[in-house]
Length: 147
Length: 405
Image (cartoon, rainbow over all chains, first blue to last red; front, top):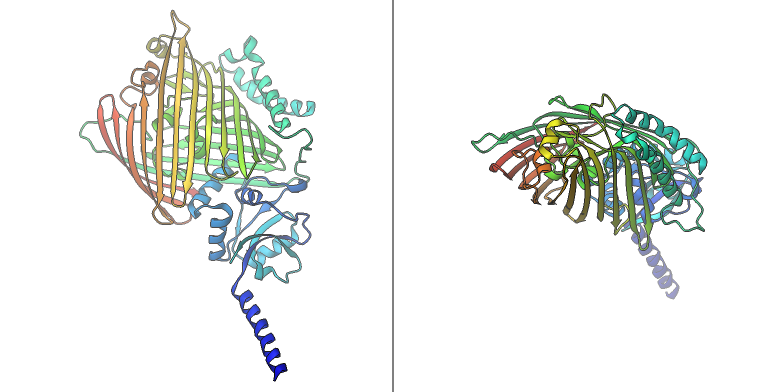
């Protein structure tokens, strides 16, 4: 009886833990597993997605927005750039006009986005941590938002 | 350093040669060396990193060339209706069609920027033409024709209607061809740099110097890259220093400085102003602040114009400023209101001549709504009430604006 009770309690704890992690997720900054970049500060992340030059250790990075998920876009606007969609659109366009280069593009096809990140060590994007878990060619270098 | 100066001077040669086609005041004796001196100063400042410690090595530039092309078309169409029975010869953002073609090219750290402006009111010219080098991340050195960094409004919105929430510009920020009273363009050298410090704060500097406008055909006439007929273009210098509580964020406070030595070649202007030269000094401040759905933009300018060159001389001083408040009612609809005011502009012969006595609004209040729809298009409606010499006038504007692709 005691053994059964102990096993039941242990199973209960395992199931409870699994249920917690299934309900919670986080948004992470993603680069290629081959990238030399190990982390970026919050300011560097914002500058990157506003189209400014960010070059840690001489490696010029390029941002690509993940447009595959509406909720992801909302989290990006609120927590990374702290702007509304309209403000972000206009600010990025203004920066592009000032600097004479394209604003950070957006990719709605997540598979294509992850392929681009895997093959180019200079590309930076963001994604749900659950979706890059187990993808060997990608690594998360910063948590941008946690549920 | 020497190599950087040589390459920068080589880039500046076409700009200096363009200046030579004017009536040469800018290139005489003591003034001739100024563009190169400014260029050298710009290189020194950029190389110093503006606050980088001596122990900090300069970050290397991009290891491999990367290419980036920007091509945008901005268009707008505006309808203006006077709400008073009396006709008003207003040139404030005349109705009609406008387009701006913007092209940018980047290769590694090198940049090229060009904007061409066109309207149905026969205004078409090269608004900007700039060649630049990103000396280090966050530091750009440009050579060419650019907008003066001392203008708070125009530096943020450029000439693009889609980028500004309101339909009309503040009167003090009007472009030269729209009876603007402040110089808005320089052809020369521009340095832009930004640094982060402390707890995520940012400091930005933009400083430019070169050939400024003259007064010709009744208005300020900046140097035109194509077919310049504006007379002699003398020294202009402008700077903006911005402190941001969150580096690269939208909020911040700026100090604005400007100095323009303006040749008055227009006989009508000489007679009206009683001078052949005007030295204009500008001191201004600007604040941008936003919180949740609210945004505030405010700027104030104090201007001194020293008129001389004929018998006698005098200095005219005046001030002008505005405050614009916006609120996002929904993710796509924004309401805004703006109040503009000025002091001593009605007494100024300089303002009366350039701004047009009949057309200069020494006070104005306006309010409007903007609806962003489709991908990058907007419809706006604006009601304004302006106080002019001739009385108080009310106007209604409707505008469509867009950015393509």
